[in-house]
Length: 151
Image (tube, rainbow, N blue to C red; front, side, top):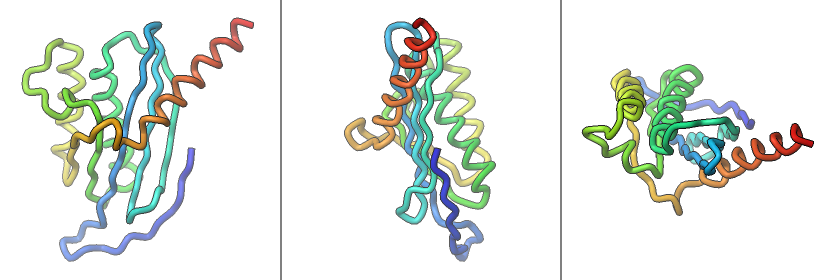
Protein backbone atom coordinates (compact mmCIF):
# COMPACT_ATOMS: atom_id res chain seq x y z
CA UNK A 1 0.00 0.00 0.00
CA UNK A 2 1.26 3.46 -0.94
CA UNK A 3 -0.09 6.61 0.67
CA UNK A 4 1.14 10.10 -0.11
CA UNK A 5 -0.25 13.29 1.36
CA UNK A 6 -1.09 16.03 -1.13
CA UNK A 7 -2.42 19.50 -0.47
CA UNK A 8 -5.08 20.48 -2.98
CA UNK A 9 -6.15 24.01 -3.77
CA UNK A 10 -9.83 24.71 -3.35
CA UNK A 11 -11.76 25.68 -6.45
CA UNK A 12 -14.26 28.53 -6.58
CA UNK A 13 -17.16 26.11 -6.05
CA UNK A 14 -15.66 25.00 -2.71
CA UNK A 15 -14.68 21.54 -3.97
CA UNK A 16 -11.11 20.44 -4.36
CA UNK A 17 -9.52 19.08 -7.50
CA UNK A 18 -10.74 15.83 -8.99
CA UNK A 19 -9.43 12.44 -7.91
CA UNK A 20 -9.36 9.65 -10.48
CA UNK A 21 -9.54 6.11 -9.09
CA UNK A 22 -8.77 3.20 -11.41
CA UNK A 23 -10.10 -0.18 -10.27
CA UNK A 24 -9.92 -3.70 -11.66
CA UNK A 25 -10.42 -7.32 -10.64
CA UNK A 26 -8.92 -10.58 -11.91
CA UNK A 27 -10.56 -13.94 -11.24
CA UNK A 28 -9.47 -17.52 -11.76
CA UNK A 29 -11.68 -20.59 -12.21
CA UNK A 30 -11.27 -21.67 -8.57
CA UNK A 31 -13.09 -18.79 -6.87
CA UNK A 32 -9.97 -16.74 -6.21
CA UNK A 33 -9.79 -13.07 -7.12
CA UNK A 34 -7.36 -10.19 -7.07
CA UNK A 35 -8.32 -6.54 -6.78
CA UNK A 36 -6.33 -3.45 -7.59
CA UNK A 37 -6.95 0.26 -7.07
CA UNK A 38 -4.88 3.32 -7.98
CA UNK A 39 -5.81 6.86 -6.89
CA UNK A 40 -4.46 9.85 -8.78
CA UNK A 41 -4.80 13.48 -7.71
CA UNK A 42 -3.29 16.44 -9.49
CA UNK A 43 -1.76 14.02 -11.99
CA UNK A 44 0.22 12.19 -9.30
CA UNK A 45 -0.26 8.77 -7.76
CA UNK A 46 -1.38 9.23 -4.16
CA UNK A 47 -2.58 5.73 -3.22
CA UNK A 48 -2.24 2.17 -4.53
CA UNK A 49 -3.54 -1.10 -3.18
CA UNK A 50 -3.63 -4.71 -4.32
CA UNK A 51 -5.10 -7.70 -2.50
CA UNK A 52 -6.52 -11.16 -3.05
CA UNK A 53 -9.72 -12.76 -1.79
CA UNK A 54 -12.09 -15.64 -2.48
CA UNK A 55 -15.22 -14.81 -4.46
CA UNK A 56 -17.92 -17.18 -5.66
CA UNK A 57 -19.92 -14.66 -7.73
CA UNK A 58 -19.29 -13.23 -11.16
CA UNK A 59 -16.59 -10.81 -12.23
CA UNK A 60 -19.03 -7.94 -12.90
CA UNK A 61 -20.52 -8.35 -9.43
CA UNK A 62 -17.09 -8.19 -7.81
CA UNK A 63 -16.07 -5.22 -9.98
CA UNK A 64 -19.22 -3.38 -8.83
CA UNK A 65 -18.35 -4.08 -5.18
CA UNK A 66 -14.80 -2.78 -5.79
CA UNK A 67 -16.21 0.39 -7.41
CA UNK A 68 -18.45 0.92 -4.36
CA UNK A 69 -15.44 0.36 -2.09
CA UNK A 70 -13.43 2.92 -4.06
CA UNK A 71 -16.22 5.46 -3.63
CA UNK A 72 -16.28 4.73 0.12
CA UNK A 73 -12.50 5.11 0.30
CA UNK A 74 -12.69 8.50 -1.42
CA UNK A 75 -15.54 9.67 0.81
CA UNK A 76 -13.64 8.78 3.98
CA UNK A 77 -10.08 9.82 3.03
CA UNK A 78 -10.70 12.71 0.64
CA UNK A 79 -14.22 13.98 1.42
CA UNK A 80 -13.93 17.37 -0.27
CA UNK A 81 -12.85 16.10 -3.69
CA UNK A 82 -14.71 15.32 -6.87
CA UNK A 83 -14.21 11.64 -7.71
CA UNK A 84 -14.20 9.71 -10.98
CA UNK A 85 -13.92 5.92 -10.64
CA UNK A 86 -12.67 4.29 -13.85
CA UNK A 87 -13.44 0.60 -14.50
CA UNK A 88 -13.00 -1.65 -17.53
CA UNK A 89 -16.22 -3.52 -16.70
CA UNK A 90 -18.89 -2.15 -19.06
CA UNK A 91 -21.84 -3.85 -17.28
CA UNK A 92 -21.07 -1.92 -14.09
CA UNK A 93 -21.28 1.38 -15.94
CA UNK A 94 -24.01 0.63 -18.47
CA UNK A 95 -26.33 -1.90 -16.81
CA UNK A 96 -29.93 -0.69 -16.63
CA UNK A 97 -31.52 -4.04 -15.74
CA UNK A 98 -29.00 -6.28 -13.94
CA UNK A 99 -29.15 -9.94 -14.93
CA UNK A 100 -29.18 -11.38 -11.41
CA UNK A 101 -30.25 -10.34 -7.93
CA UNK A 102 -26.70 -10.39 -6.55
CA UNK A 103 -25.36 -8.28 -9.44
CA UNK A 104 -28.36 -5.95 -9.05
CA UNK A 105 -27.56 -5.46 -5.37
CA UNK A 106 -23.94 -4.63 -6.22
CA UNK A 107 -25.05 -2.10 -8.86
CA UNK A 108 -27.44 -0.48 -6.37
CA UNK A 109 -24.47 -0.09 -3.96
CA UNK A 110 -22.56 1.82 -6.63
CA UNK A 111 -25.52 4.01 -7.58
CA UNK A 112 -26.25 4.82 -3.94
CA UNK A 113 -22.70 6.01 -3.41
CA UNK A 114 -22.64 8.16 -6.55
CA UNK A 115 -25.72 10.03 -5.31
CA UNK A 116 -23.82 11.34 -2.29
CA UNK A 117 -22.06 14.13 -4.12
CA UNK A 118 -19.67 14.81 -6.95
CA UNK A 119 -18.85 11.17 -7.69
CA UNK A 120 -19.20 9.24 -10.95
CA UNK A 121 -18.21 5.85 -12.36
CA UNK A 122 -16.98 5.76 -15.97
CA UNK A 123 -15.83 3.10 -18.41
CA UNK A 124 -12.21 2.76 -19.55
CA UNK A 125 -10.72 0.12 -21.84
CA UNK A 126 -8.68 -2.68 -20.26
CA UNK A 127 -5.57 -1.56 -22.18
CA UNK A 128 -5.91 1.91 -20.66
CA UNK A 129 -6.58 0.70 -17.11
CA UNK A 130 -3.42 0.89 -14.98
CA UNK A 131 -5.10 -1.09 -12.17
CA UNK A 132 -5.19 -4.23 -14.31
CA UNK A 133 -1.66 -5.31 -13.32
CA UNK A 134 -2.37 -4.62 -9.63
CA UNK A 135 -5.43 -6.89 -9.78
CA UNK A 136 -3.32 -9.65 -11.34
CA UNK A 137 -0.70 -9.15 -8.60
CA UNK A 138 -3.42 -9.47 -5.94
CA UNK A 139 -4.56 -12.77 -7.47
CA UNK A 140 -0.98 -14.05 -7.67
CA UNK A 141 -0.37 -13.19 -4.01
CA UNK A 142 -3.49 -15.13 -2.98
CA UNK A 143 -2.39 -18.14 -5.04
CA UNK A 144 1.11 -18.00 -3.46
CA UNK A 145 -0.45 -17.89 0.01
CA UNK A 146 -2.50 -20.99 -0.79
CA UNK A 147 0.57 -22.82 -2.06
CA UNK A 148 2.52 -21.87 1.07
CA UNK A 149 -0.30 -23.14 3.32
CA UNK A 150 -0.48 -26.42 1.38
CA UNK A 151 3.24 -27.04 1.76
